Image 1 (cartoon, rainbow, N blue to C red):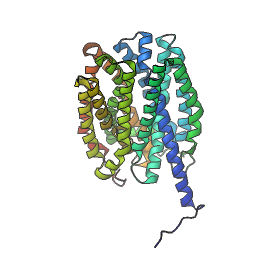
Image 2: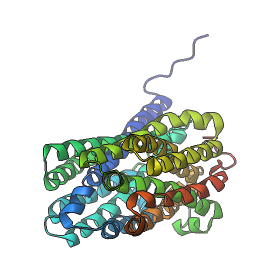
Image 3: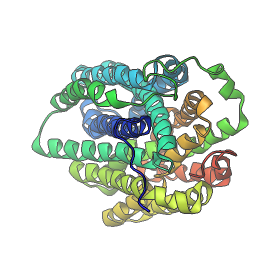
Image 4: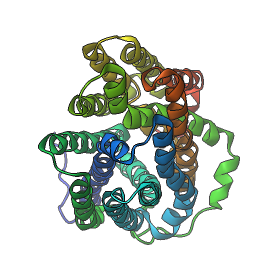
Length: 406
């Protein structure tokens, strides 16, 4: 017997259409923030050389991004609960756009303007991250299967595009200022329009009026599971952030490659993460979060060690593939785990992201400090310690009773 058709104007059809639009809008939010971030990251070696920074000094400058994120993340949960994920992304996209312009113009004048710009950039990225992950969890529940990693694959697609365009512009001799100002203008013009299709953060609410929070956002900070998921995410965030900030520098300094090859190594790392996030949901649906995350974390450690000790740029590129693919699912799975209960998704995702972003706070100066003593390439081995911790506590991301096994 053929399945009954659903009238196009029925509530079920309207909800399905809205969900499809919401999925596309969520992909756009993830892609855009990835493109903005990688556009900046691709210019790190050029900014370092212009300002004459050592590895330790560069680590301290990069700390400004993490500082901005750590301040914005605890505020993001209450902000999303009050104003909605759509409005939060729209506002924070404008903040990031301004920040890119400040960095692009300010680096011509010295370190101080760059630090200010990076702080603003981190502030915008942090709240944007929480809001789009809350929206991703909403549409994931509506769709009924694991798609959060694919949203993060969208982020990775954006980072690959940003890294490759950055490499091309460096090869063509386009300056940092022209590049970052242009990206800032595009982000400001496009993102507020692209995310208009976000679905309501709760079933009863308009996207910009999600209703009152069910409880204080601070309550999530007292939940042991939420904090453990945060530590799990922290390990993967440290591995990912280290790759973002230091892959190109490690290839240039440790293997003596050119700037373009260094940026292409960064793009390879990002492309591997993208592939892992796109194909990973099938593994999650088949084997579950815990087993998949443990196996992939171990693969990431193996790739990291090959990157560091391979001895040849070709082997380092192969290590970057394993490193990136292996850590691809940790962050999105942590976000899904935080949003298992939709009533508390905004506050829990905010807490988990806040704990995870501590890796971005401590990571750059730690790698920079170690790099001063053993070289940036060897300093990357510190990542393996935290990934081992993630393997040990992976059980904490097991779905809550009553939620779907994703």
